[in-house]
Length: 588
Ligand code: PEP
Ligand code: MG
Image: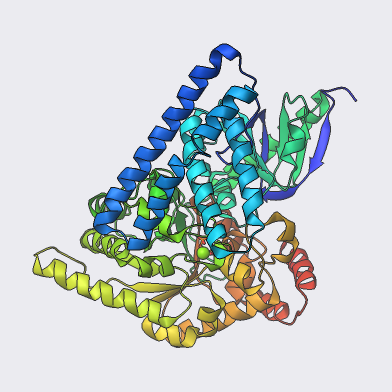
């Protein structure tokens, strides 16, 4: 086989569409660094570069510590003290310098070996103290590596036109920066169907295939690549015939998207005239134009955490207020549902060390099981000043249009109560100061944790509306990580248990005459839409780009047919049988 022969790989289809372009390896600070020999003459310069990285890291930690002394919890001051000690440890100073002299290799590669060695020696020790020190060491070494390789981190915004991004894993903060003209497709080793990076790729219409061995690709001469995100196929160095075939498929797909989009001004209603409202899920306030163009009824889910995921600086109350106010004004009377920060899980927070709020995030540390850890409302209740700041900004914006508050990852009704009390308290404070706040700000509960689905009849008494987040609900009900491609075959959005839970939640909401909306990725799945209609859902929230397809699907069904389909689906007990049934019954 010649180096440029066509090679076909199969992976997990994540985001539909065809991407054709030039492969680019996208690395993050955690990836392996190459070993580059240096000459004797370069040694002093190399040591100087290393000392500077140490110096900058020390400055970061010192300024962080200074800030934490005033407002942070005492543990964090102690942790940062340990980090400062580590930066002066002989391992980081003399040992490293000796190794650079002896081995004559680039600093990054030596540094990584030294740290790896140390980690291996200590991670085998069960002692809690040593485990903590390893965690500190990883933290400190990331900081030093970040300063050693500031220019090595290619940014998504700096990728050449028509690139196919190859990476071990994509994080949401990077994916959000990708533009469709620069990035033709994503191919990664890790990543699940409803991981946040996957959601963003689909929202932007960028084809994506995961579960592909990226390391192997480093050994092949890569000239061009075709990525078929619908079938999960990656073709390396396609020949002329293959290329032509995929260019035609791509043209066809674009044409059908254009056709469906041209009807997006039509109402969201079933064949027999039932009105269905379609709202938008939004990560980037700049996308408001697209959702208005696609005839959205409003914003059903603003993932507010994206305000700082890529900027890496936490927004102040004033900054948030201006953003929310601008958003609600441009919606011209349509509602804006702001979900309070859903921090944690696969949305790793990596604030700039100089950011005044960085200590909050440091204090969580590395969790063994972040999806089950200090995420969303749990995090906000631990650090209430962040939540207060956000609520104040939301309340101030509520004077300019219809604003709702949505609480993520509620696992107990008491979490909702605390938010409601805070809203009332902050409302009083603002009113006393003469600041205008809307009369009524509905507070909704995300139903995405099994306990809240099971307790929905109690939760609905204390919520103004419910929002079913199937991405997490499926992950937690089926104990199947939404970001892990190895168990994607166990992550069934159409599992019988999920249908039963949705039926329960809708029944509770209807009984109490309160609205219920569905905002997980299932809401945009043409195989799930008729089932959801049949289960009683009338409000959908999907990425702005998917609104035309959702409308198009809804406009093909009668409610009676959808109810019969849902009834038949509820008879199934095995996930695979139900999936086959739905595929056969919904492909119109
Ligand atoms: C969900 O879990 O379904 C949801 C909409 O929230 P996110 O995807 O942001 O976790
Ligand atoms: Mg969720």
